[in-house]
Image (cartoon, rainbow over all chains, first blue to last red):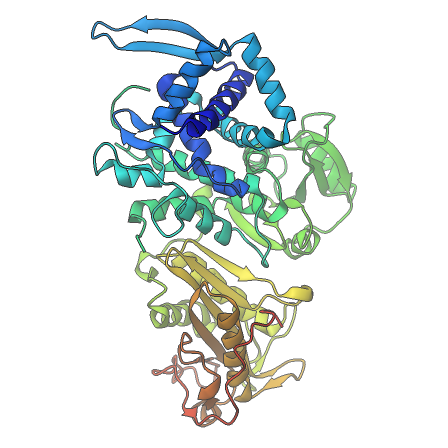
Length: 216
Length: 355
């Protein structure tokens, strides 16, 4: 795996855990994957693209090995604390992640830096809406995301590119939302586009039998 | 290009017509604030309707302004009695202040046009949400089911535009069922007040399409630049945009007259829209014809050279009046006779869409 991808994901994981902490919400490894996936999905609204090596379809939803490597790496360096460690009878390990004191310091430095501040803005915008809809619904929201919804039927290991404008994807959905809410040639604000997008995920997820049973 | 599933389109359409999203987009305000404001205002009217019965007033949203007290029916009664029926409140319906002003929907449309402002006009228990100069939604707070009945039989895809227009004719125009447009039926003179003639028809067609286009994501009454009247209707679907240009023929009460040249003008205008906007996949020119039946039949030619390939033949809707109502129908063909081009095709050079 490209080390620069892991480095980018260390930035994303710090941003995700930092903004989640603002709502007093630790993230476990599966929720962390989902939160970063939603960050990647909406990145096009911020006129940027997510890392080229991204998520794949996997057992509990979208999975990017670089995200797990990044959080392990941050924990090894003392920037992330592992709390509520549990092991099931089958041997599966569950853990919640949160930023350590050093990690919070790093997060504040990232907020002040031009190179990383925009990624924290993306994380904040996602966190604000997830918080509004409920952190427990993170999984449902991701399962309603159009790219994942379509690729899921094809089995595990399918690459998820959320920004392709000509395919059924978040990128195309965001294009339609922006177009439909434009008036007199003036595009709607980024906030409104994100509000509409998350409302779409929320409404779609509320349809019966949208999300299979499973871990969060 | 892959297509979204029908259930995805349905959910998207629902979201794009959510009053909080639409009003928030127009006014540049967070949809969460707008949603809270609308919900609380509806609850206020519902709770207090026995006290405010028959009163007309307006809630004007003042985002993030610190309010003094939670609003009660007493403040509203005092405000309407004192001639200050514009009640400014924040998103949690705390009172911010009072203002003078009229409480008609058209007044709210004027106040909010081009301004980051959202108003809820309350007439008794009926509420109109106005933003960006348009009514975004309307509802009876006490009996939401009081909304106009939905005729399922009228739902049609935008691809069946002729069918939609036929239904619109039969349900709206025939015998002036849903709105008045004649100033003098025997003389076939159209109204021009309180709204301009073109706007009367544009609004009626917009309302019909907004309600009955089955595959719409959103229907927009486009406002022209430089504050001119809205005349176009834009139907946004997942497969592209459909634009409808509305015109009228004949004479109105101000003495304004339009003859068959107007048909070609409409086609030329639409040609320019399509040339300038790659998202438009289909266009229609609808002309409400108030001329005599003879002129409608014999003087309805147009210049085919001005018609874009994406534009259907112009639709002339003959307006029935008292004297000819027995014979009046939408022209079966809805299509006037084309004539050979007299002019060169308009330049494809990209120019400003609005004129």
